[in-house]
Image 1 (cartoon, rainbow, N blue to C red):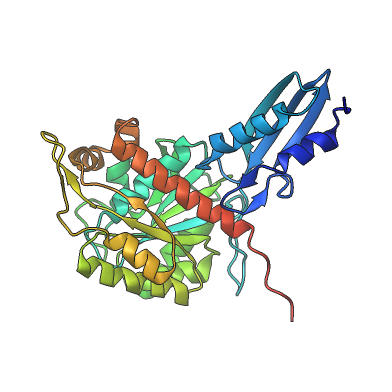
Image 2 (cartoon, rainbow, N blue to C red):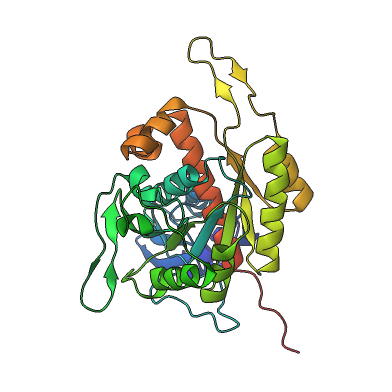
Length: 356
């Protein structure tokens, strides 16, 4: 019987591949703290996101591979995560200390449920175990405080703004600075100033993901975002409706011009399932989000149905991921969050451009 060694265990684990990164977990450096005592093997697998959609699959593969070795009497595997930074500072854009990845959530037009998706995406990432913050970048219509159930004023610790906290995420919004009925009538330079402040003058602490709810369309805030900080990528929200799909093309093109990669497209209001009979009605068309993602060569992150409690949760400040965590809709949001996080992880392993 061959001696059971670290090398033998690592060789066995080379059969376990990360399907998103296309390499085995030994080559990627995921295997940590390997110990062998009297035939008992223990190690951890450190993934690039706590929201990894194939975490359990990889654990089972690793368990099977090591258990098959001669001399193994038991195997303990701990699944951990250490989120890496996807975006590289360039062109004078300063990273935010402690913030690893900034994710913009945008849409080519209003009325597609962008803020609902952004809020539930942020909460879903936090429920997976990520350290998450959120900026309400929709300065003219700051609805994030309503959807998260936050009634607060921004406070300072004497040096920086202290974000509010709710549902496991840290939040700043213009809604904390103005009355609900007061219109915000600002020109571009003022918008740029508040966007910069929300990034650089807030005590964010250590964050894996900072989600930014963008204004609809292709305007000043997107330009300010791209000029101020390095952005890991953008999630573009659409409905299956032709008008929304057309505007989503413009949104993807805008982010491309701003050197912000599109992490993927989410099709919201995809269908309505009758609660009485279970029949699915395609109120705004069918399959448009996935089709346009294929045409543009960007990932499709998933479909989200019309579900009245989602609206109720937004109105009462309890996102559906919190209110009904076991519902099909909550699981759909969690799947979208996992796929978005996977795209961020893929970006962290992209090879650097060759030096001329």
